[in-house]
Length: 490
Ligand code: GDG
Image (cartoon, rainbow, N blue to C red; front, side):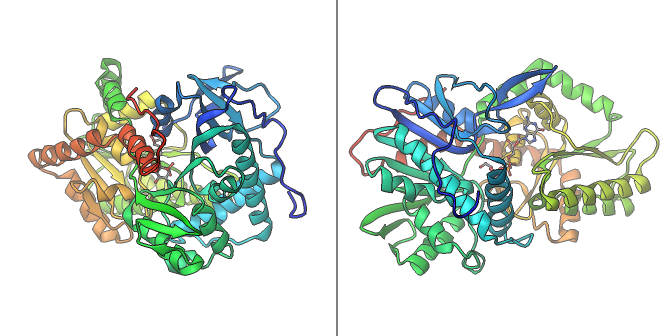
């Protein structure tokens, strides 16, 4: 969309409300809770992966809940209008918006900048105009559908302008915003040519939530410095309104994962997988969206050097690395994939023997049951992002280790490191430190491993994704007269 085009509520954004008086609880997220999958020549709608959907489904169900997002692909084809009692509302993107709003501003401007500028962020005015237009479309669609005094929960970096836009249209609604990725320190954020409207956009919310305290205080400091908000890091005053700011670390659906990990079919799949891998002494596992922030190359380099110096041997050890295809249209991601595949090739070429590769690399996604079976078979889990808002894979691994065995190597730069203090914590930029951490995990004394895993399991079980949603929504309604949403467990 060009800058001169006036944003409007697009085709397909039918604003039928959940009832005569509209929806009481609305979620705005880039994706829908279900996703289109082509299988056996037919179109199916499967549950989107990740804990967000399972956390929010019980909250939205039965409360005239509505979910606004982009269903992906061509919006002319028939789409479901409901999922488990939740009204689904498609917000379409045309091809230019997909390029400029999604691939461009969201993923080539904000994503690298917010992740410590691991890659150089690109600042393009056309992309910004598309970002404004798409945020405006979402705000209008929500404004038309929300019941009087409704609660609106806006998710992630794609929609930082929605809180302010929506408040201008519907001052009666309660607005929460949660950022799933890191919020950068001042030196980086200040590079953003649109720093002011983004901070103002976020300050339109009643509650702005982050994964960790560091991100929350980065935001509050910037809000004071750039737009003149006043108050503490936790409670700010801006334009005569009170805005709460805080850390709400997201988690996983621990009970659901434990159920899957205890399923005899999944457990026997884990046994089968170990046999298929040649029954090695130690299975190491990495599971990541194939993203340059996830530190996969450093991990492979460390493992390669350990094979080279004889600390690991393909006859006894193996690494399984799943790289889930992601943002393949972006040249950064294509280059990252080529780089990783070259590294895997070099390491396997030098250190495998026939039938015993040093690394099994899969550029594909696997089913949830296969993923849980992989977590069960992994003696050592390697989670080494250079920067990560939280990292759910680390928490999923811990939840699935029902027998309290296994070792987790975890980057200090993942939000999860603040809670999983019993992981083997590592600076992924330090190759020798990474090698030492992997060796430590491989050789960890089983009694110590179990003590560490038990403590981590307590953290993940107690603070699951349902507790996260409950805590956020309770904080959003703190100090206001209306009742907070009923947050029953599923
Ligand atoms: C963003 C932030 C934050 C992965 N491979 C498969 C599969 N997955 C699932 C995992 C996990 C999810 O995808 C990945 O979540 P992460 O947290 O690791 O990473 P991001 O995608 O970068 O998510 C992150 C998160 O938002 C939530 O706030 O933690 O920091 O970057 O749930 O299990 N699922 C299936 N097959 C796969 O092959 N079924």
